[in-house]
Image (cartoon, one colour):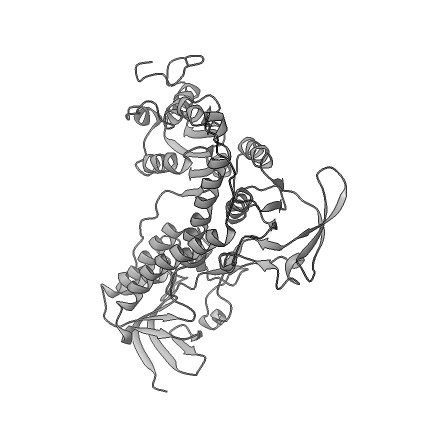
Length: 480
């Protein structure tokens, strides 16, 4: 086979890979995009978009069933599971089409469908033996689901995010392992669509929440909807002809064996670097086999290899993958010039109800870097005006700032409209605003965001930079 010679080779055509391709292409025409599997990003095919479609259906069902407190009586709510899943796939495929259109716009000569491995730091070899010589290489191979030993013997009745959306209809029952972001989103959605759900975790974590008080509040709220044991003892999980049997210690103190149609493994994802033979590059690898890299340049060691997206095992979120792809591709295109790229303020949202949000530094980081010199502001949404109007009045928001300067450091929230409040706070953090400056911003009435103002006022008081708080202030106006 004729060897291929390029300036930049990019392994993987997901969000990070496409970003890297566009950035590198601005500096050189000799770019090759390599993909081993189906084109289309994880987000569009098996991640954020199909999961949000399922969540949207669940929200519609939940609202219909819980309209009575408003004086609205909805009779005979029923769920057509086949129709729900058909819409998920139909709309999912539409999003994937947009991605494929972007791929098809790339010249055929700059695309290669092949599985490759490193022969050395500048040479890739396909499974068919064709060599690709590239001066710079970007690894953007994404991630794959991780199965704990307990679930590795399951086959026909095992679901992950990569096949759950292919179900022809909704199951009757589902055991979810892993109350992280994916498990909580899909588990709650399935429950609201009429599926009997039980959720099992290890270590007490729920949706990535760091603050113990917020996590305890969330645990109680979720358990009002479905069975959730974030520190479960599960003795065995075995497959039967009709489903799966789970033998576990129930929270009532009794061992039980329960049958489920399926198990959903939401036990995390790992960088997809197996088979790349990264050991042949001479790079230093971490315990997962991922090259050690600079998170601001995405450069691996002192090499001409860069890594981006979920493959880097840094922050597995789409907007982060896009940023990493852009930085890695830019530096691959400019090499040997390597520049630090903009890494935005961390922002994460979990689309449960109530939602979970974190912005900036999380509590562990604040304790590490600002121990003894930070303050906390708090608001409960149980009495917050607009939240109570809409009967979405569950949740807590905590905001953090540095003593002395009043610099806003970060926030964590379990509550209504967290996705919107998170964006406001991320912008404030990236602009390095103080709490006083944030409180100078306009707040409309009545909106859920007024709860943020209440939290900021509490924080300003704790910083000893503001006036006394007004007891039982129901969304006081700006002059209060």
